[in-house]
Length: 142
Image 1 (cartoon, rainbow, N blue to C red):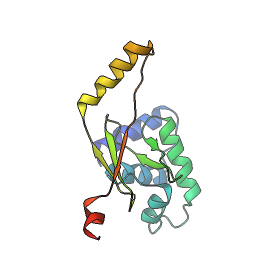
Image 2 (image 1 turned 45 degrees about the vertical axis):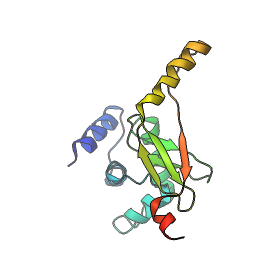
Image 3 (image 1 turned 45 degrees about the horizontal axis):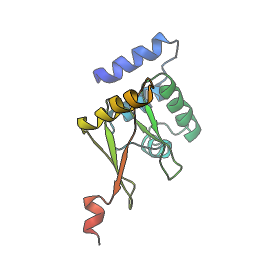
Image 4 (image 1 turned 90 degrees about the vertical axis):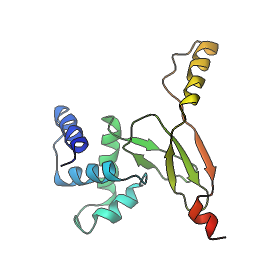
């Protein structure tokens, strides 16, 4: 089993959450996924193995993972939440045609937090930025 999954499961157990096979499967899918899936995406991927699991069950578990600090919920203009298990500081480039989200890092932007704290007196806890464009796959289809 992936050590990241094991650590996440231990963290949940320590907060008194019972680890069900469904929770284990959702968490494993998220930690293995680099696609920033929606609850529907996870449902479609896991439904063959867990036919009794509903989208609502997945969504409720995702919310619990967010509250436990294991996953980030990403909300963009399309009104569908996407979930990211990569908690490292990074940004997202989003394709305006297919909705694909790709992670990227640009450390120089963290200077923005320092400048904001300095100029406003705020205790800055983070920032978010998205870049919008067309991915290479969609650009080739033109």
